Image 1 (cartoon, rainbow, N blue to C red):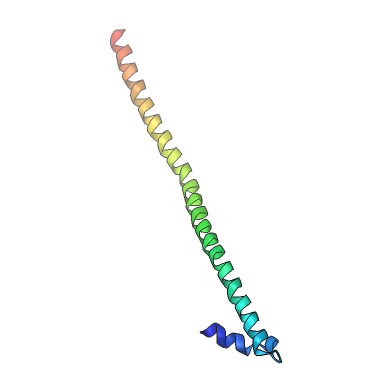
Image 2: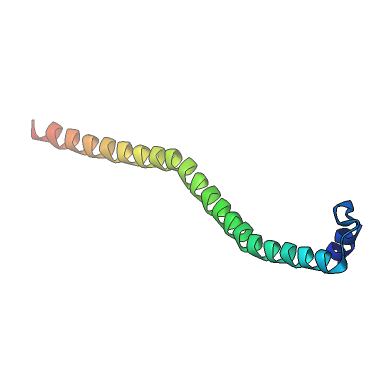
Length: 89
């Protein structure tokens, strides 16, 4: 394992006993295992935030399309009403 090799080359552990180095190595492995799920959780939250940002950015386009449809429908209704009132007069 690359971690074991790198760990053995650190000058911080120079002059320490094998037992001290082993205990420190075990502590480091536990710390890594404690951090790993948090990294996954952060990655998942980043994905969710990214999706929410994309959705929020699409709202103005959606609103514009809805307004355009509503305006077109209003114009059609207005033309129809104008035609009806034209023939009644």
